[in-house]
Image 1 (cartoon, rainbow, N blue to C red):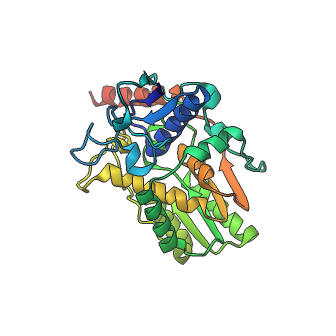
Image 2 (image 1 turned 180 degrees about the vertical axis):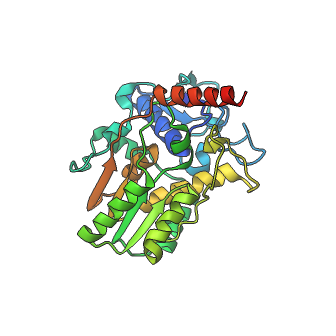
Image 3 (image 1 turned 60 degrees about the vertical axis):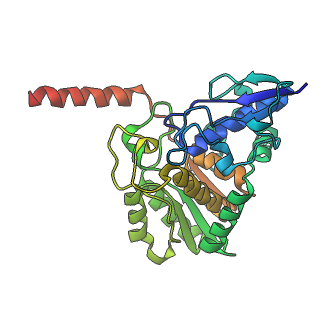
Length: 306
C-alpha cells in the first residue's frame, strides 16, 4: 500500500513564485516523512487556471513535472491518501524564506535544503523547451549581462504585510550605474511587471537594455493585487506566469544579478549555477503601520470632503 500525500493548498492572491516555493516545501516535507507527494492545484483555488478551466486543470502541470511522475489520476483505492494541511508551510524546518538570500558582501552558499528545492524544481518538457528557446532568443550565448529584478505595482502601492520592502527604481538604477563602472557589463536584462519602471530604465540605459516582452502593467487600482486584475488577453494569468518564469530563468543565466528580496529572487537562486557578482537589498518588511496610516488618511480625506 502506498502512502500518498496530496498537496492541496488554497492560493488567492499569491504570485506563481510564491506558489512554487510553498509547493516545494510540501514536497520536501512528504519525502522526509516517507510519503509520496502529488501536487493538487486542480481542486484548490488559485489565480492561474486557463480561461474557463477553473477546477478542471491541475495548474502545477501547466509548468512543472509531478515530483514522482504520479498524477491524481494514478491514485487507486488501495492507496492510503493523506491530505496536506491547507497551509503554505507544513513544517518551518523545510521552508526557504527570503532571509536565506545573501546580503552583500556575503555570497550565495547553497545548503542541503536548498539543494532539495533545486532537485524538485523540474519544468515539464513543453515548458523547458519554451524557456530554452526564450533564453536563446533574448541573450543567445552572451553572458556578460547584468540581470535585474525590480518589482513595482502592487508591491509598492499595497505594501503587503510582512513582505520584504522593495528598493525604489531610483536606488536600483543608481546601483546599476555604479556597477557599470566597476564590472563593465555589456547589457541589462530587467525583469519587472511595472511598465513605468521598465520605461525609466529604458530612458537611462537605452540600447543596453535587452527587450523584455513579459506583460507589464501601467497603472493598477490601489487595492488590487496583480492576480486579481483581469484583462482582455486570452488565458492572461496562465500566460502571465509563463512569461514571468521565463524572465526569472533568463536572470538565472546572467553573469551578474541585483534585486530585492522576493519569492521571484528565490527562484532565480534555485535556477542559477552561480553569479560572478550578486547584490540583494535587505530593507526590512512592510508592517501593519503602513495599513493603519493608509486607513487613517483615507478616513481623514473622506471626513474633510464631508
